[in-house]
Length: 134
Image (cartoon, rainbow, N blue to C red; front, side, top):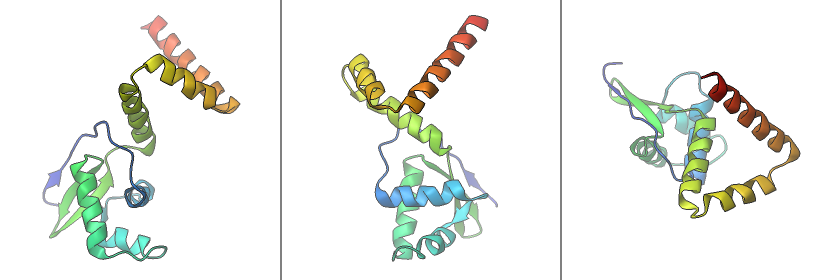
């Protein structure tokens, strides 16, 4: 693998259906995938042109959601960050656009399940513990 193009993820927009399917393949893969490998995996469930998959992967790279590296004449793609980091970035971006952050957070918390509320409390408690010890 001769050259590598690494990009840093930024606050992304929500993924389209095809982008999400492609990212699911990259997140599930143990190593970087070529366009052909992604196309082969997706063609089992959807009829997609190779060039469509190539375009989606190129757009994901331009959005900084993937990292790509040259492998001969082909590019190999991997997710730039875990899916959980993308979800957190999307939530942070939504809050930035909400206008009234407090009201948006209150409404969000009002919609979570009891289990999700417990996870939020646990995360906040851990952050409090880190701030007090640091």
